[in-house]
Image (tube, rainbow, N blue to C red):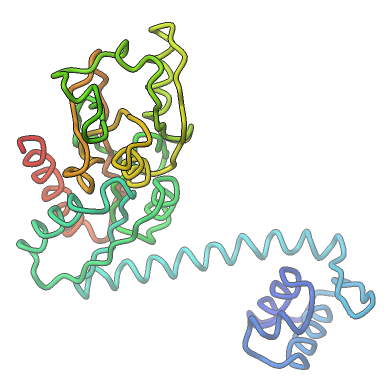
Length: 299
């Protein structure tokens, strides 16, 4: 078998994924004849029949699909190298990429980041707001340096530290009848319209458990995937909820927060990849985040 080059492999992969030579050519920024030539050379060099020509489309043969699985693994490794290069560049050029879940994407991340910048004023910060599961994968693949996540994350390739530990509070609309009470008990919520997190959020499972233990049926009128959305609907008067107090920052002036009993502890997580190439900045960002968490809990 004669040797083949990376461009031929790229053309093969692009055609398998797109199904047509024209789409593959567009994705590779070359002409259709160029892709056809690369494919022909690749088939010749491998000695394999890789495609069936059916009505203008290229249908991968079983041999092609077995080969594609190997090719895809190799390209995944190449992308891992690219991400490692970017991570090294970030360290050398003074950059830090921080991921944050929506619940902490307002005042908390601003205050924590400003603490970090007081230590490193020339570092360029990029903040990505995504769901925790996405951020966990990004940390593991070195696409971001550090992430602020919720407790539903359990990733074997991450170092996770709890922070902002605090009991859940009851969030009420202004002028709600329960706002007169100093403390809210689960029995006070019987029949109350309740805005819940969806089942992907740990707090939802905690709330379900509270109602079950009290032999009560919750009156869920809406569920939301993110804290900002949930808190906005409480502020609008649609119902009450149980949240970590940090989640209510954006609507603090439009809601009432009361201690909730029985106490149910909740917290967030800081995630990083072991052996981070940006370790100096990551360590200082973690320190700034923990300091801001302690300050927030005293407010």
